[in-house]
Length: 184
Image (cartoon, rainbow, N blue to C red):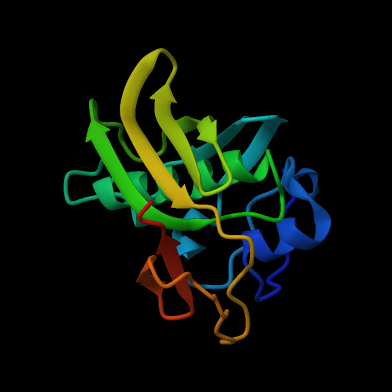
């Protein structure tokens, strides 16, 4: 396993510049934000619409019972689902609009889990993924992640400008991005 040096750049920024293959066999880079908890996540396989990662469950990822915390599993659904979408187009990570997860079994600290992310559907406007976490044949969690596939990226606090039609409804997705849904 090769590690990334701290670059202050997120995995999405690196993939946009260098392609998803640039992460293969390495721990995912992070910028110290929410994804810092996954600093030991390794991307081990890439196919179109499918990625496989492995992650050791560390004490930092555990709950008071010494098992994988649900929030860590939800973060895996977010990140691995995004990686699956990036296997289709490395320039379009999208913006999360829905994420759900079902917890099926627990796993203890010092266990390595395998996380498989699949693209269920990829369109002009939305991407749908499913992410599963397993230890061997035991399914730990299943999550679904939906992202708005915007044609531009939020970077450097610059607000993207959309010119919606008058009949469209505009929703704020994040402080930098709006999502326009047509009414007909």
